[in-house]
Picture 1 (tube, rainbow, N blue to C red):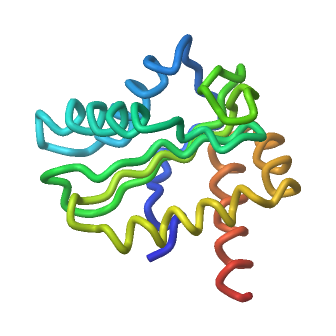
Picture 2: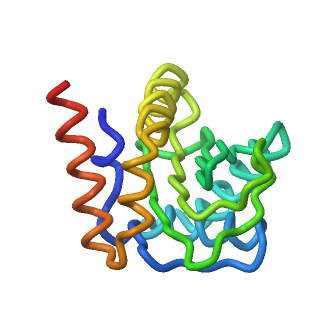
Length: 157
């Protein structure tokens, strides 16, 4: 299972905005819920993301956040990637605001898979050149291509 495979084109946004961390988590929950017929899923995603943030910020530093959680009743893992127009305070350990957000939710029983996906995210965002490339993307398609290129290079390594 690879990160980019979890991203439908409709869940990749090169121009997103939110006025607070709470509003960003609401936007993420709505984005991750796209296409679901489960009327309560968006609320469960939002609650799960908030519960995880209460344990400690998922702001990695250097402008990157990876809000994530395990969600009851979710069928499979789902991801979303947002490049924020204006960096937002996300309580990151380095105090820097966030402008790159990869959100991930997995079914409640996906403990090992969840850790593997988080490991891939940590590897992805530890590459400062790659993060700079993502920041330079101005369209959803350009972001999608950059993320796909990272996956191809990662699989070849």
